[in-house]
Image 1 (tube, rainbow, N blue to C red):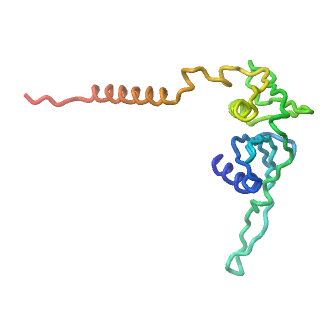
Image 2: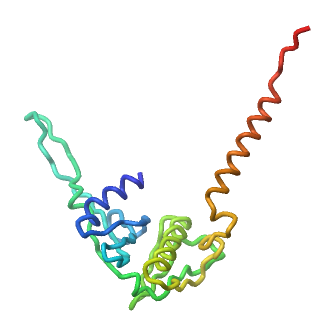
Length: 189
């Protein structure tokens, strides 16, 4: 589902503006409809954060026959950027309390913007993307407060995906050997 949303937002909102959608999470907002916090990189390597609202308006579109009418949502009218900031203007990301599973966090620009993600894992996923983009495109480390660093910057043991693949293959082979050793073998006398 999220890959379809990513492709649709990329096609409708970001590609026409010569931007690439890097990461997005669904957030809770008081206004009706679905809302997303997105981070994108422009052609000139400028990183932008944006709030995107999706308000599905149903339009009746006639199909081939005179008797049937099909209701379809108009996707082009659905996605609208309501707020946009530059990553350069982000001075602090405050996770509020690292010891509590709280999906809410604060983005400090010239004003503080409260964001409530749909889950704590979505919050950490988005912040990891912001940290990587800040290191890569802004050449500065992002100022973070009240986050569990084990989830933001993984240790060297977990950061190398190749090691994890090798380890999972070894476990798979070991499991196969255990299963095969438990199979009864007919003994011919």
